[in-house]
Image: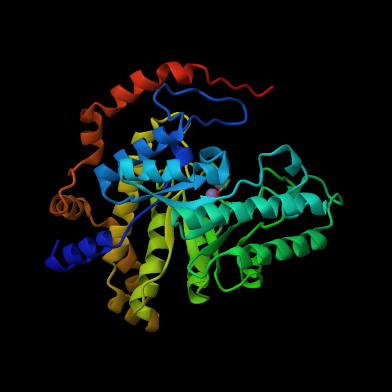
Length: 396
Ligand code: RM4
Ligand code: MN
Ligand code: MN
């Protein structure tokens, strides 16, 4: 590798942070059941502790996303504790995720519920979440809705759209100037006929209606097979509407598999569109990179380390595409040359340069091996096994 790519990789990694999901450290499962891991996080303190480990080993995860109901069940009363944990474990609260899908009253929806009283409950929870974000100095309020319907004819799709617009505007009005509202979309699940925010176009329209601080959140798992996600990314960048990512990989649906485990080239192409945009426009993009994965079978901390190092690798590969040459080849319609420039970057072994970067930051060269040798997993397994053994779930 010449000097130039090495420099590009170091610069790219200096600017690349990725947020960890608190829920990725807890016991989760499929709808058919949970396989309990003795080392899984039980309390919010465990989650901060585990996230702190991943950050200490990778240097790339200074924040942890919080799901209000799971991590702060007492709402504002839990703020002081979360601040204390952030201080203790060296990871700050990141995006705040209101939970509008779990409580019994959301059976027929939250912002799209035909009952105005329930829409108001959902809005109030969202306002409380914004207040939590303010007190925790979190910038992003990240909204995912399970709203939708299961059978044709059972919901007034246009009315629901309007109710969403009203509540999203009210949400936007409740934010302070520095905050952002991230609107996530998903084509199906848990609703299987229609979902109120089913794709990026709907999320974009809602974000535009809500106000200037609203942007779209792209969860890579929330697309139909074969959909061109990097084109969506390029369009959102061009519209200045790309707010953040939830990264995970998929084979069939919203599988929440480890990033890059199925299709690393796709993640590379997404990063490429972002970095190409930055090079061409001369301005940095303002994107919250977040992980949205919860591993049911893999060890949770190991899976997170795997994810972060994979993200760093694919981001580094995207950072060494020869942009001036690519622009020339595209302009000249030299298809093979243009395509090869991407393929050459993707084929480059960037691991030595990444190890070098880690070394320069005083980080372990190989975070996974260091984690495995650290004894942390054995220690938490001992501490948490008894509490986790109480945790059982079944489908029916
Ligand atoms: C959803 C969506 C949300 C996440 C929940 C747990 O499918 O991806 O972002 O918060 O799962
Ligand atoms: Mn998500
Ligand atoms: Mn999802």
